[in-house]
Length: 316
Image (cartoon, rainbow, N blue to C red; front, side, top):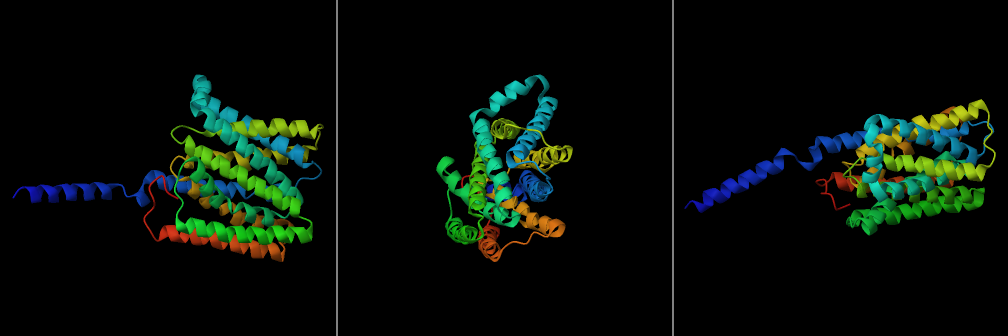
């Protein structure tokens, strides 16, 4: 006769335990969500800041932008860890170095995308990063991909195809391809952050700035620019990228890989608005059509996730 009460008590205890910290209300998860969304808002300033550059070439902008980022993060890491900074780099290990290399590729692709296509075209292609991240996380981290994500990938691929085809007609094909390269690099960075989520992965962002600055400086040759262009490039590195990366890296410890890129889509929403308001840059019809398809895929994927309980880590 006592087995049933014990079982009932056990079930009640288990149910109560599950209700204490439901995944949707985990304060660390919600904090991560806010951090990642604000990070995307900082990143959305990149297009308008690049359009304000007077004469510096893309390699020069990339060198100063990335160098300023690396310098700022070096100061932050030294202030945070003091004599333990080298131990922190060792702890971050290969995921940080690999993630930094991926992000350096993303930095390079993005600067050249801004040089050769519209801001809207570039950010709409970047909008597919959540889906590329999900696919890469499946391969590297064994995070499962649900049917909704596979469907969203197919739809987003169609939208990217529309934009790339529009680039063939407008002469922006190279810029579109560079945006695709940037998307791939950013996805690799997001997955690397998840691989090393147990520790502080801010060193990954430092490596990205260092790698990109060294390569861009070598490619640029002459780094002489005006004071205005130097200031804008440095502002991009410290504020637009640096502040955003610090928030994104901190938030990545509590948010699954595919959601990282999804939540940072505040960049995609705001970037075309800034350049439209400030300099009147209007996207082409192909850009709007393809971008609408990509955003529909992302919103559909997000909506399907909101209709069910948040998945445990290991599913996408």
